[in-house]
Length: 107
Image (tube, rainbow, N blue to C red; front, top):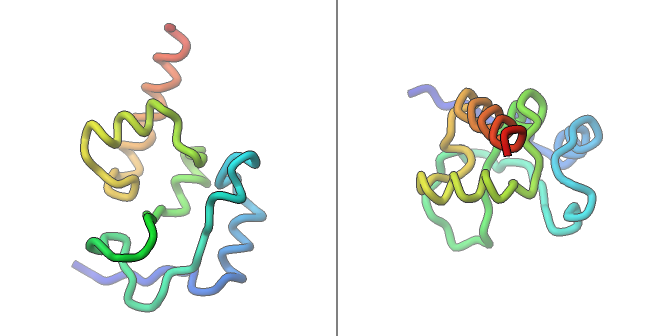
């Protein structure tokens, strides 16, 4: 498996993303901390002793409209499949979003 490095290696790059994309709802923006990846950090890192965190790909926010905090539906799904957000393929997030919209329309 090829090793890919994050393009977000500095706070400058992270801040540029924050200005261009809707990452989180303004009501929770003070509770969410976006930080650049460190050298050698991969999306699929093992357990750590750091504070609770997870990794996300930019396409989740840019292309799929995922926004933090996750909806109750998204949280319930992630708990049901016992997965971190980054463990779902972007196509799975797209399907999940479409299913969520369909369910909300149908009641």
